[in-house]
Amino acid sequence: MIRSATVEASRFLHRRIDLVAVPFGRVVTVDDGAGPYREAWPSGVSVELVRDRLPVLMHHDPRRPVGHVADLRRDRAGLRASLAIARGAAGDEALELAAAGV
Image (cartoon, rainbow, N blue to C red; front, side, top):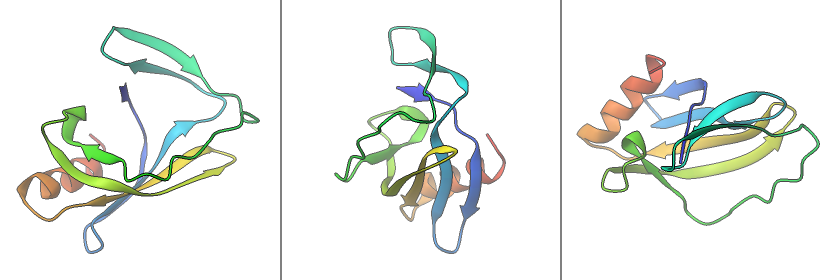
């Protein structure tokens, strides 16, 4: 599934990317492979947080893991994620792209 997200911080030293993964109260375009569609999550919706170690994939490609979701939490803005990015060329690229807002 592809969902755009606004990166709030890209921390090279700690190899973390912080973002709002699912914004509340905004219409966003999502693509789950069957074609893009628009969705909105109301601010009062109950979100069950997944505590398993979710992978972070470069360009959503399952063959290109670059880290894992280290933390998920909910606040007024939406579902926030902190991504732990692995050391290496692909992880460095992910951090650089996030810092550039790509």
